[in-house]
Length: 183
Image (cartoon, rainbow, N blue to C red):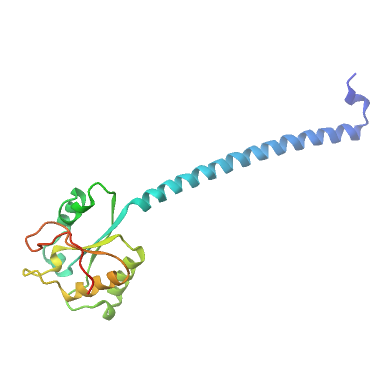
């Protein structure tokens, strides 16, 4: 005869309940452990991706709308970026991210007079890139920079964003890759 047969029915039932509760609790904690383990792994994955993203330099290219509408495809800028030539040679093997490719809104249209252009400038300031590179097209054949572009890049400089002269190689720019001093 088993011990449990000698005990009253109520005692047997409470022992069964305790065993069920222990098994149920173990299963529940096991699921919780698996769930917590997945959360920790996912958090670590996010941390590694964020760490990689933080080590990558964010670059913005600012170009002329008039040039873009007439002949520029942006291909030379992106090719120089990809190949690390022209003004991008200074980055060597550093990881770069093309964070934005921005045009002005046209000749004579200043950010303070145009809500759309002001929004573009604000977005660039918000992402706070490591540098803004001014396209070759932002200067005329004599090397004079457009006043609209000067106004735009002065806003970036006021917000602590370095502005760099040029993207791809061109005879127009003698100091390609040089930082543009604040005015």
